[in-house]
Image (cartoon, rainbow, N blue to C red):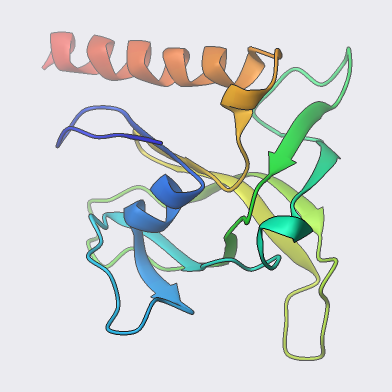
Length: 155
């Protein structure tokens, strides 16, 4: 799922995260068009095929975690492998909102995988918050949208 409109709050989940990224590995033959704009490097289908889908409890820095962890549902999920330096000095840096230990850890792979990130009014998740009954991440995105609207009103 991706909600996109230039300059407005944007949230890409799973495949939407891939589309928002500036760099993708393990693409389909011939690549795929990207919307880009978010300074992250993503690998498609990082955790394997559909049968390798899984659930994991997530500790997300952006959410109130006092009550319980967030239920992460990963379906043929990509992975955010790297946060890149913004190519434009006016862009805010990417903020990591949560990570999990890398279950596929090989010598050349990172110890942890970023599961959620934000850069300005763009948010990307490699899991599917919309498939849970937990609304905390949706509430977080609504706050991003409110702040964006308030900034536009002040301008």
